[in-house]
Image 1 (cartoon, helix red, strand yellow):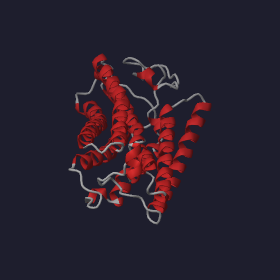
Image 2 (cartoon, rainbow, N blue to C red; image 1 turned 90 degrees about the vertical axis):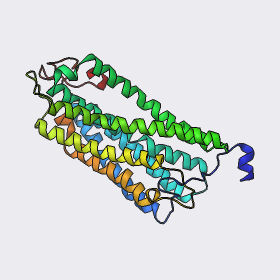
Image 3 (tube, one colour; image 1 turned 180 degrees about the vertical axis):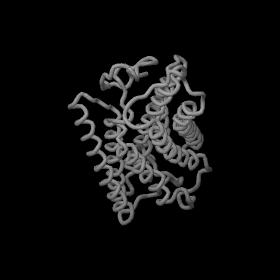
Image 4 (tube, rainbow, N blue to C red; image 1 turned 90 degrees about the horizontal axis):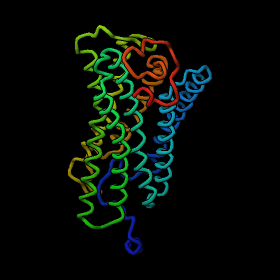
Length: 305
């Protein structure tokens, strides 16, 4: 410990964290099971993406799901390695960073899908410049929130100053609260789409009924809200010493409110074939484009925004 202080850290955390310290006999087999599941979904989504691409049906959200799976594969590999090298603080930092980072892609996917529902059901609202600009701003804040979480987590482990620890915690709470608010945005989109008076210019897109699309997005968003809400709630609770963790610091909560819910979300989005249900013409930028000539979606989702 003395040598760590001379170098200025990193210092082992004295506060209880989600999932606690991983152990080889418990965390390694559980992580291995989830690792296999994420690999399976990574293969499925990349296969879907490549098959669609070969027939000029480029649905980039399948690529984003693949990217999410790869991030989670890295997360679980790091956790297994950490379980075998428990005193490696830098490894612990990397493992915890990836736990917070991967799910952001799912949050973004939900917003994109719900935005398409709103634009189809209520074109005059969904395509309004104020809403488009506001949604773009919220997208841009996502990387900022991630940087805030990572920076605060790293800085707090390289100092013993209580004031710095307090500041870092405040930064983390602000970022996690924003992410929770962001996960709720699809609910607002869907509610506006289905509760407001039906538009005479209502459009359709993709395969399947609009009701099925609404159910898919609502279920995925609800699970994401549960994930984000658990993380925010756990962090808003007063810090507890590592020797006296709360119930929400348990390994069961860690795996259930992270990886298990994420696998359910992956299964929902992948097996319901959102690449077919939520496909839109490329270059859609205004009311009427969804029902226009069926141009293929480009590799850049920003063309729609």
